[in-house]
Length: 242
Image (cartoon, rainbow, N blue to C red; front, side, top):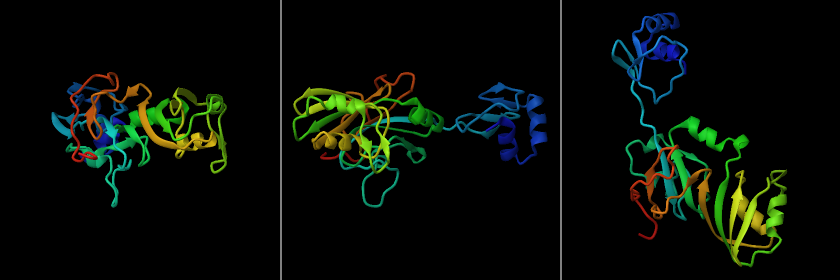
């Protein structure tokens, strides 16, 4: 939102009057005077007029959560515990998910109230890699990596999956890197090579890796530029099998 629009909206004045106030140097952004009436501001920006608060700066939250199996990736649900239920923060109601995991998948979930950051991270054009550790019931075929790289045609969506990297670790475990997020994609791809997935765990999204000190159900805040900066994990309100 442009500064003049915000000022007009919250001070109940016209755009012309808002511009006059800004050009007169009466408006500050984070304690710095500005005469740029077209300056872009968001709800994280503190704005004052004549040293009176027009808009306080909201807390910017970026949270890393170790999601347990049995918890759904949603902000509200009447039947199941959600990832929001695991977070003990006064502003958790402002959070939204940055990518989802199904109820039977564990691992990294990111949540934030910063829409610009989450949209940039999840935009299809950016093809941010997502890495999963997979355990299968049957031995993984030796030609599976080539099939994952070639892609699979998904009849329901009428698309062919993007090339995915499959690293076979043991007879029944592997690491998969995707650059998209189709419905139950990892499980469907393994089904196509004759394997049933019995355990699925997300390790990372782009540069953000699940911290080793985060136990199942725990979470921590982080800054994007220092995603791996260690913070003390916080216990969830509820932790599976606790």
